[in-house]
Length: 145
Image 1: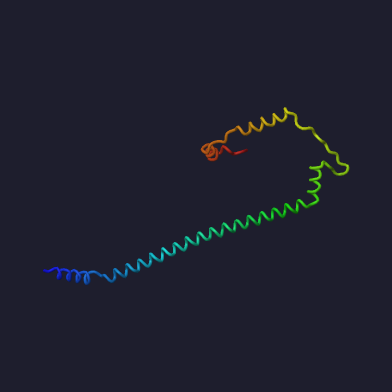
Image 2: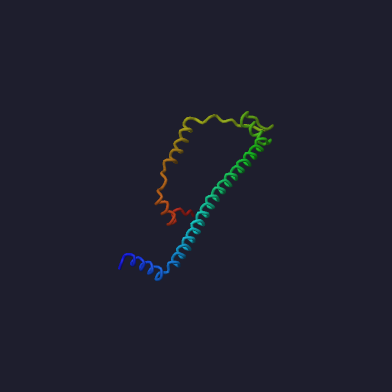
């Protein structure tokens, strides 16, 4: 048998014994399905990212609007008569007619030192570890009666 005959036999065998058209068709359909799924996943990812950007901008707009409303409220308060009276009392020491003002001297050095020691004692207590906090939570150590 010559090489040419072997090649022809192999081609005949492949052509008529294997469903090559069906295999190619299945492969093409599979490739189209994978391509469609990949495009869908990319579109969903892009939509998710765009939605995240829109949500961030919406939050920023709400925050800006809230800050604007707070500043408008503060501006109205600063223009009110009540604030003007309080500012005059605080800065100039004036009072309403018939009102008596009690002016106290500054704290003594002993009172100032006592205040500082109590504030530093409160700060010196270390915060409990995360494990002990969980233990207190799980076993009811934080319950107040």
